[in-house]
Amino acid sequence: MSSLPEYEVYALKYAHHERSSRDNFLGGDPHDAPMPLDYFVWLIRGNGREIVVDTGFSAAMAAKRKRNHLRCPGEALRLLGVDCGTVKDVVITHLHYDHAGNLDLFPNATLHLQDREMNYTTGRYMCHDCFRGAYEVEDVVSMVRRVYAGQVKFHDGDRDVAPGVSVHLIGGHTMGIQSVRVMTRHGWLVLASDASHFYANMNETRPFPIIWSVADMVEGYAKLRSLAASPEQVIPGHDPLVMQRYPAPSPGLEGIVARLDVMPKQA
Ligand SMILES: [Zn+2]
Ligand SMILES: [Zn+2]
Image 1: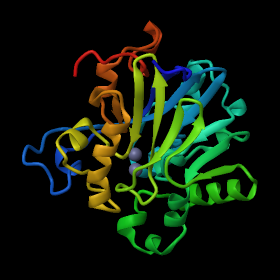
Image 2 (image 1 turned 60 degrees about the vertical axis):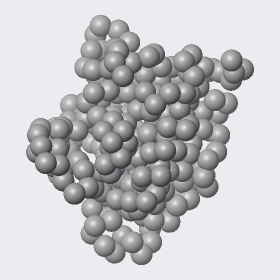
Image 3 (image 1 turned 180 degrees about the vertical axis):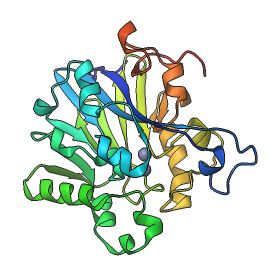
């Protein structure tokens, strides 16, 4: 076995959105069945560290985008004893509105971001609605302010964030989306974030329709699997099945928090 530290990993659900399966696959879906999205932030904890992955969106943004906001991501983290004001490391997988709002909740954190995501969100492609639609300019501006405050750690490709925790450039969904790999007691776990919204996107090679590069997205599915100890240990970014397959860490947190560093109830 590895000598790396092993971490606890949690998915914290903060919002929900009802929609049809035809909206979740490039080219649609013949079944046209209900296929809702859950919205998560993630916590990696162990070896004296707390690393937050993504920061979610606020109640105001939920109203603007007509999403069902269940709780502030900061309040969800507090349920696990996390004080957002003292968190030192936050990985931002990409700057879409549902992953990179609420940066003000983490005033003392270093934000880990891929070079390409910053380039993408401040460059020529944002002239086109098809690329900028899931971004909020104020979130991007907040990130730029953190750059000027010296609080952003840029990564170019695959890099360690801590012993046993690393970020991996995937691309596809956006130019600079990164996934996170974590050592657990069951080996490597991968938080895919939006590199695969649902299990079905990666397992059936049917891309989600918000795309920078179809080629990179499809290649990314293989990369995600290659990083994880088993295919089941790749956690998609928005799939409600995550809350069904993984247990709550305590009875009071049912439906709010899922513990991911255990083996899932079903494959
Ligand atoms: Zn996204
Ligand atoms: Zn997302």
